[in-house]
Amino acid sequence: MSALADRRETGYRRDALWIAALVHRLSGVALALFLPLHFLVLGLAIRSDASLDSFLGWARQPLVKCAEAGVVFCLAVHLAGGLRVLMLETRGWRPGQRNLAIAGVLVAALAGAAYLIGA
Amino acid sequence: MKNLIVSIWRGREDGRFVTYEAPRNESQTVLDIVTYIQREVDPTLSYRFACRVGVCGSCAMTVNGRPRWTCRTHVSKVVEDNRLQIGPLANLPVIKDLATDMTRFFERWQDAKGAFAPTATRADPIAAIKPEDARRQAVDAGIECINCGVCWSACDTVRWNADYLGPAALNRAWTLQNDARDGAAKERLSAVAQKGGCQACHSHQSCERHCPQGLNPTASIAGLKKMSLSAYLRGELK
Amino acid sequence: MSFRLYHLQRATALVLAPLVLAHLFVIFYATSKGLSAASILSRTRGSDGWAAFYGLFVLAAAIHGAIGLRNVLAEWGPAPLARNPRALEAIVWTLALALGALGLRAVYAVVA
Ligand code: SF4
Ligand code: SF4
Ligand code: FES
Image 1 (cartoon, chains in turn blue, red, purple):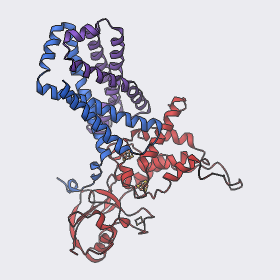
Image 2 (tube, protein in one colour):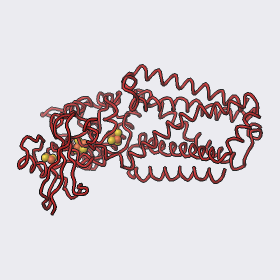
Image 3 (tube, chains in turn purple, green, red):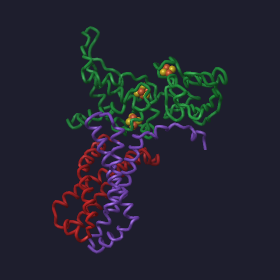
Image 4 (cartoon, protein in one colour):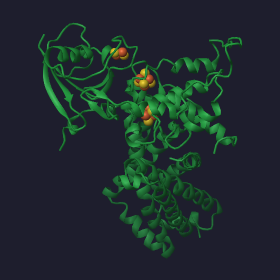
């Protein structure tokens, strides 16, 4: 192991907007991995309504619910972060990006929590 | 005051940190510390500086994990636990100790067509540009770059994408795109919309956060994205 | 990322934004009412509206997701792949096709 490893040079990774970009990327990857599973499950309805129903029954377990809330969070946070960047890239610079990014994460967290409580 | 514990990178890429002690003074800068060690402890220590007043852009190093202009960075602002870790700038090959090879950083400047392309000669009258003109204000906001490489070192897109032009070169391109006297806007726009151009930027604003001149390359790059999007929609860029 | 893929990704993002918002409302509605598979399917079966909504959603998401994964691989992937533009291009279209096909099958399953 070279001493390069202890060369600290990525302190900027603690900044809010760097983390926002990371959250955007990780939520995107999570959604892309989730999509095929989601499609396969819905495809069950081709065979019979009952197989979809039994799946929905399984999905009512608390642990599965939590995972679903995670997916809702990912979807909402990816939407919010994406809209922020899309505005920036098509309308030009606006100040206050840090606050906008934080607000987006909060709204998405609320959506995830609301899903958990409401479901 | 207690002596500072300073670890300084010695050698090339495969070097290591060596720990020194340096006396602590009032209003001391990080560059003062490096200079003290070179003059009083180990004259073989290599580093760069010239102006010592934040003009030349040659003194940037990585200080406690973040890139800084060391001549204008007070020790009191960055010291943690009485310790400083001073390394070469990131994302550039290390020549020796704290000196990096900045060739790639400056080549990107060329790749982004960062040179002014005049449209008039000295025989022509001086162009009249009003200070309140919106384009002139965009130029003003980005013009004071000192080529220090701090933003380059704070940019993970530079780290992850070998083609990326980087914040400073793109910021420079944006100021020229808004210069009414420049005549290479088309070529420059297509140069910065190539692979590795402005579209690769992730808008983290790490560049803006660290730029010692208070510039905002993220804003300039967002401007270039918007500009190239309109050109694309008008069919002028492919 | 190529200029063309960048714009394709932003265009699909623009299409997806309202669809995702609507989908989130659908999710909240369906779960808060505790709808069963039968009651969901009774609403979607034979509906051109739902078919168009989710058909468009699936196509845009397939392209958007594939380009996104390609970009992650280009920056974080193993060097031989990350530095091979042709392989990356192949990955985009393979992923987009696979996701699109699976997705359209799912839409068909719930609306047909
Ligand atoms: S905003 Fe763009 S240029 Fe600035 S650090 Fe992030 S990727 Fe680099
Ligand atoms: S934009 Fe700022 S940080 Fe980057 S080279 Fe210029 S002065 Fe230095
Ligand atoms: S020595 Fe000139 S900017 Fe620091």
